[in-house]
Image 1 (cartoon, rainbow, N blue to C red):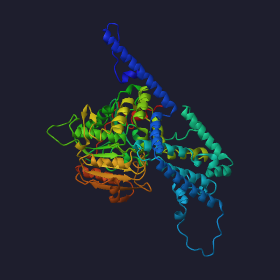
Image 2: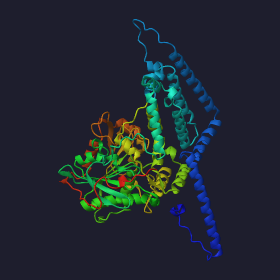
Image 3: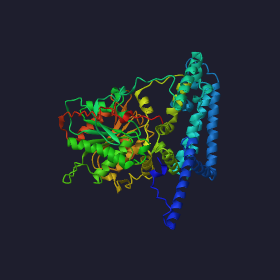
Image 4: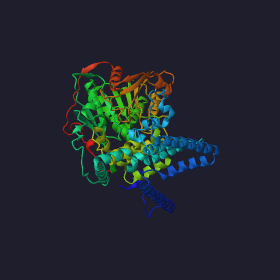
Length: 626
């Protein structure tokens, strides 16, 4: 596909054009050639810079360096702090070298060790160094030096007068370098790896080398020499909840699941997952499948399975995903059942769902069953799971999004028409590289511990693409300009406002979310006009949502706020919200029932259509190697 045809239609060229038109056409051709050359240069830059814009990084470094150079007081303060921390570290190293004194028969009570030596607490609180081996010399010195340097850099990267984005970038990239240099990542500075190699006669290192070689082969598109996890896959232990595809268009398959109770709630449930992920994150193994659990609670459950785009879908935009995705599925269900629908959105799917709800509420979108005489909306409630509608505080995700970075991504996507799944996965890994990259590689390559394949790992490797236009619109309209939260977002050319949403809203945030920080998700309180119930659950972006009843160490906070509730900051909310043990799913199911009519109807069986097929459908099986 011609790259330029994705953004504009070329003016026909020919000798019959008037002279001034020929000059204008020549200038246009020259401008397009220059733009194509710029795009090619940016694409090459992205290749050798691992997808990170050097321009963005250089601007952040310049901001930091100029403020540091013009702040002698800050220089003196940072130097003094470095000397103080260096002296404490040296003293701790000296104490670690000295042999432990012989204990007295009746020793006097000693103060808390953590209060005397904070380095012990530092090691215990860091998962990389919590093993007992790291408390011994000389490993203790290496580990504490890494932690102390990180704490110093956190202060050094936050200079008065810096742009917030530059401050965030400098802190983040500095932490990435320190994580890379962590002694836990290298064989000769990792006592656990050395001990394991000694006791196994080097077998752990041989296994680790084999796993590293397999990963290199997979990166080159070659099959692994030691394949594992083949027994699990879509339709083989994953996405096993019984159902039928009841609707298919150019963008989605709509799956309706078979009921497991004779009676169901009158109001059906429609789930919109993120198009960044395959839908079966919410239908993993039978024991932790959200949709299977909802069906068991007496809900009629539908879910959207997004089309995995290719180069022919480059021009798909945000409007297409809302219109042909959310609204098309909603229209089908509402016209068939004639009941209000519980709309649920997860991650980016929640953003799509909020846009659709606002467009319906403001009259900018109508369904085929729309009755002008009936003001009741086709929605009973809106649930937003780890979904942002205000992007002013996107957390670490904001490090990767600014004008220079978006321009680089746009030029990279223009060459293919989409953002590859590997590029998307690499971005998420980069945000939490300590846990998702370095810790995993240490465990595999240095300790020789093979990861046991599980449903979440296999789903995470099943990557999807994003169309060029939609991704660009999403980054610019939401992250860069925050149009949705500030009432400037255009749906089908008309501005919509989240203030038009007056139905009850339940929003779920997760404590360790690197994609949608819970304090950002919480901002829905001040954007919609309806009652809001906010739930904060432990875990991360995926594990906090996929949190089935019975899983150990699960808890959540929940508090309802009426539409007339005075504003509570996130910290005030957390201080007032009661804590509950266990999964948040039962409370959510109860909330869905309370927002409906309370009526029970006969279970709705999905109709099998041979042309559409059964769940999990065709879209979820489309995989690309990039």
